[in-house]
Amino acid sequence: MPKINTPKHPEEPGSPLDYVIKKRSEPIIDTVARAISDKRVLLAYQPIVHAKNPLKPAFYEGLIRVMDETRDIIPAKDFIPIVETLETGRIIDCLALEMGLNALAECPTLRLSINMSARSIGYPRWMETLEKGLSMDGTIAERLILEITEDSAMMMPELVKVFMANLHKRGISFALDDFGAGYTAFRFLKQFHFDIVKIDGQFIRNINGDADNQVSTTALVAIANQFDMLSVAECVETQEEMSFLQELGLDCLQGYLTGRPETVPAWRVNETTLQRYV
Image 1: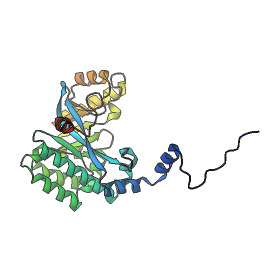
Image 2 (image 1 turned 45 degrees about the horizontal axis):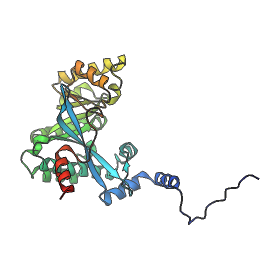
Image 3 (image 1 turned 90 degrees about the horizontal axis):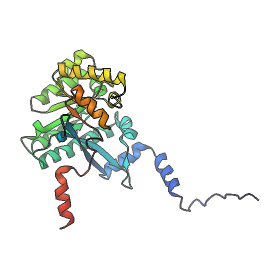
Image 4 (image 1 turned 135 degrees about the vertical axis):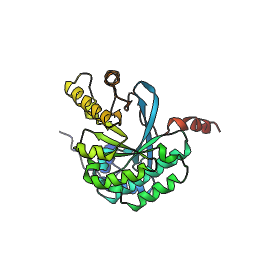
């Protein structure tokens, strides 16, 4: 006789798989909002290295990490597109900026980039966070880089231009993230005056063996050089990709090959190690 599986009593604990399914079925926006409320948010720091000397960081990028109740990281791709148009997205931008500014105050030799949406430009709390952070140390402004995605910048180009011009006067630099993935008009690119362009990873993956990516990246690097912008290749994952990009003349590289994001960055490692033995 075949075995009949009887349903579990509603109060009976489920399996680990049942728990995972339940977690995934909850609206992601609710999970993220609760994480923010409970302060389960931190930055992971990934080095952007000099192409000619991959062991030497040029600067770091602070990547937002949001954790659920079990301290598991919620993948950014699962919630960033959803919260982008909501106030939750503005709050995340504020938290990332606040943590980044604190790191800059903590380490006087650090140069750090922090992501933001163009939608946060008119958000009062974001500017208040910036002003408070800049007041901690007179050198923070010149060590801060604000990253804006290409799509975000093109949503409101006139506002972005004025915003960038005002903060450039205070020494802050700007990076255009995911360059090539959107539709930036060259007339706007010239007027924006970005200091850094980060070439989207879709053009970098397997560039050593992909002729289309080679042509696209060569053109994007030429544009960066024309407008006197530092060029960064994103998503560098193999030695072959790195070698090709070095030959191509990229200024900097970012990816798992040259350094993974770490929540305990290099400048805190010694301090953390010491605390373990105190």
